[in-house]
Amino acid sequence: MRVDVNGTRIVLAAVGGKVYAMDAVCSHEGGPLEEGTIEGYCLTCPWHQAIFDVRNARVSPDTGWATDLRSFAVNVDESTGDVSVNLESISGEEVEMKTAPGQQPAATLSLVKKEKLEGTDIMTFRFAKKEYPDYKPGQFAFFPLDNVKDVKGPVRHFSLASSPTEDELIISTRIRDTPYKQALSLLASGAQVKVSKPQGNFTLGDDHKPAVLLSGGIGVTPFRSMIKYATDNRLLTRIAMFDSNRNAQNILYKNEFDSWALENKNLKIIYTITDEEGWKSDWAGERGRIDKNMLDKHLPVEDQQNATFYICGPPGMLQGMRNLLRNELQIPDERIKIEEFTGY
Image 1 (tube, one colour):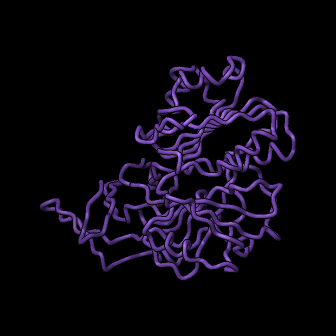
Image 2: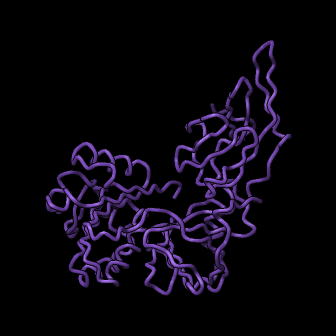
Image 3: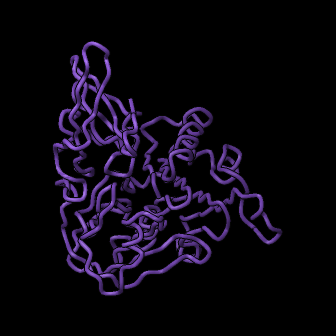
């Protein structure tokens, strides 16, 4: 269960008759650990399955995308059952000081250019790729920033929006008021940024089966990598992307997508906006959330029966798309790939 002690969010866990206390906010992307699952001494975050030992708040080596949290001393009054947590007695290291093994830098890259999507809080950062390792379209990497004091730690992971065929490493994100995001937004051209090795299995298949990409907002970033890669390599894979945004202003990479659709005969892009205020007479795309009618309208039955479906977006959109595919289209789980974006 979660308790708040003098403004500090703490999760309490009872294992083997003993009570343990640790930070309740996951160091990866702020997941609520009190909503996680516990097996033995292992507490698993509900968002991205980072695993922590409740005895000392250390992250498991198996989930190196998160960092250690703080563990607090606990005293239980046997006569009353009252639980006391000592905020001054902390075992483990401060979040800002720890970088997990999976986040260790693989290269230091130079920022070439940063761009703001007009009318939004989205920024795109372009780095000179230079000696960065090879990666697959759709993978992500960790970007630690030095000297950032953030309660969630000095590290965030971003999808690599650039294709392996490009000379730049590209990421895009929404800029929030957190210390990390503010520091990122203030980087100047030429700034040196450490980047971990590429990671993740949310990658474009090489079996040439049709691919249906379902994106919500900033979740489109890994799909840019996949589409650019398929276009540059003239893959025979038929790709249909359904890109859902609040309004037309928030459509990221639209000019690039439109130009690649003209170049790639196997690529089809369907834009839809969900805010009724954006449904102006000159909007030629779809309106409303992605649903069965929209998929039936643009996807041949053959593609629905054989395609691999990729979903990337915020938790609510992800759950809605998963239910749509499973329950209404009867798509088996082995043909569904999911990447969840949270805290963006």
